[in-house]
Structure formats: structure tokens, C-alpha cells
Image 1 (cartoon, rainbow, N blue to C red):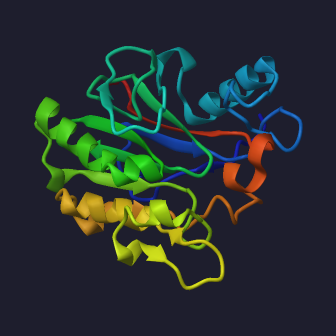
Image 2: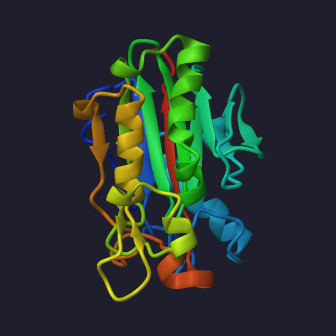
Image 3: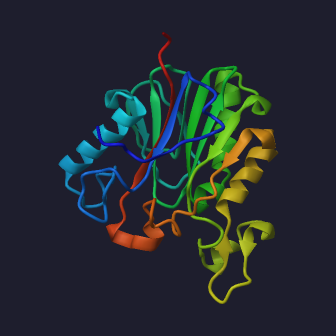
Length: 250
């Protein structure tokens, strides 16, 4: 079987009951530069996308029919997933159901994954600049504490590959929405935002321990060798999927 390159978490690797992985741009059947494109919305042949998803989920050990997708509208809306399918009007999903896997699509926006090993629940968060500015990850934590009795201090969080502060340029009108410490105006171009740092700060402000947060250093814009990036490649960019869920009891 062809090996599918994946992004995995050292922090979450110690929980065998947990399924977590993100795809990269490689290992798929779509023509270059799409490769391992997992989105039906970028002009790729739908049959290629179906095959790519099958390859990815096989590599992760997930039955595709048990996946639920966030619609992703660049909001701060968090929805609870209780069955497979798609929840259109949200950018974050939570569940305490076993054998139900939460999926978000990314190609520069910041993917964040939360796990409560005590309360046995998970969340997947898609956080672009709009979601970050609105504090969507903090709202996902609030939903976990409200719905499942989670305690923020017991959560584990992974901030996956996304656009880095080295490269994520925005207009001044966007930069002004964020704390100065995550905005770099030192270069000749437009201001650059460190959305990973801002989301890490939001996690800590919500009560997550810093030792329980893993942040990928990979910038999707820089790492052409590994990740899709809409900022870098525009209309010819594919999309990656990140998935998290609790496996069935043995």
C-alpha cells in the first residue's frame, strides 16, 4: 500500500483511544499541483477527491461514513456533532460520541484540535483571522465545559500547520483588530499576523496549561514541499483535512 504522508501530534500520541491526523499535499491521485487535494470546491475532478479521501481515511484508520465536516464560513460558531455528515453554518465542531470523527479543511487558516481525556470529548476548530479575532477557540472550550463538563486545565490542544507570522500579510485595517504583540510591522510590506501565537494565547487565557499545548512550527506558505497554501498558490491550491475523534471501545 502507498504510504500517505501525514502530520501527527507527539502530544496526542500517548492516547491510543484517540484518532488524530492531518493530510499534506502529497500522496493523492489528483494531477499536480493538487496532489492530495481533499476538497470538492477547488475545481478538482470529484472522482479524484473521493479517491484521495479514501486514501487519507484508510491511512488514518477511519471509515469515511463516520466523518462529520464543518461548513466553514469564517465565523465564531461552534456546533455539536451527533452524527456523520456536514454542519454547514459553523467553523468548529465538538462531540463526545465515539466512532464519530470531526474534520476541518485548511490551506493556511489555523487548525486547532482539542481533547479532554477525562471527559472523553473532542473539538476541531478552523480559525482564520476572522475566527481568531472573534476568539472561536475560546468559544469551543466554553462549549466543551458547558456541554460535557470539561475543565480547561485538563484539555490538550494541538495547533496544526498554518500560515506563520513570517508570511501572513494583512491590511492595516485587519492588523488593528489584534494585539500589538502578534503584529509585525518591521518589514517593507504589509503587516504580518502571528495567528498561531494569538490562538495559543487564547488557549492559555481560557485555562489550558501551556505544557498541554503543541504548536506546529510549519508555515504552510513557506513549506511548498509539504502543504497546500491558498495564499501562495491561489486558485491552483488544494485543501488538506484534519480529523480528530474517539475510537470505538474494544
